[in-house]
Image (tube, rainbow, N blue to C red; front, side):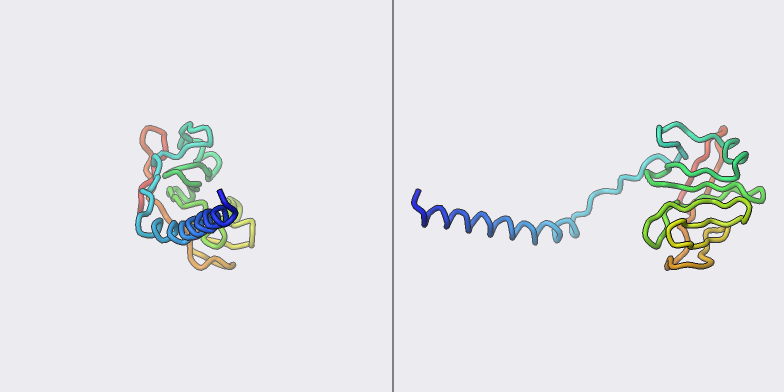
Length: 143
């Protein structure tokens, strides 16, 4: 191969790679991956179901449901479920039993017991889920 042929091939390869770098995001936009929503049962990180009595005893538990971090609160005799991901920067929120509020530890955002934003930088409240207890397991459903 001549030196000129080598540089022609190299230039074409760089052109193809650059073209793919621009085409790939456009293709991903038009052909999104199907949702990887998981099971609606609240589980711990090992995949074991979190029992309803644990939530009642502690006032709240964070686990996984729908394949994402989820917070279930038992407050005032009511069951409430939320995405545990703060809508500001994606930190995991925590239930503060003494205050009856949900707090984001990253930027001191506060949410009430219904997931509505009280203060801080988040643009909106937490995503809410409907909670049902079925044979001592906690199940969540889109509200």
